[in-house]
Length: 77
Image (cartoon, rainbow, N blue to C red; front, side, top):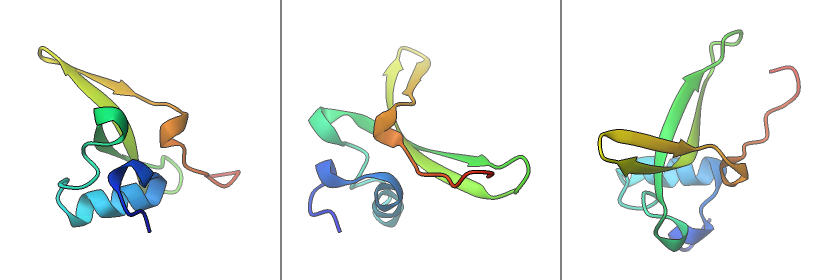
């Protein structure tokens, strides 16, 4: 288990973020802010939640999908 928020990654990041209502996990490495994006698989109908970096620019949200939010998804899903 991660001892500080900078060590959070993937599923553990999602779990800690949800368990603490965002008190842990919202602010990540170097002050980066994180949101949780939940999508539903078109074929499987399975929900997947991924932590993604985001910023607010006026009334716009900027979301960064990067290697830092990588999840390992089995082939064929």
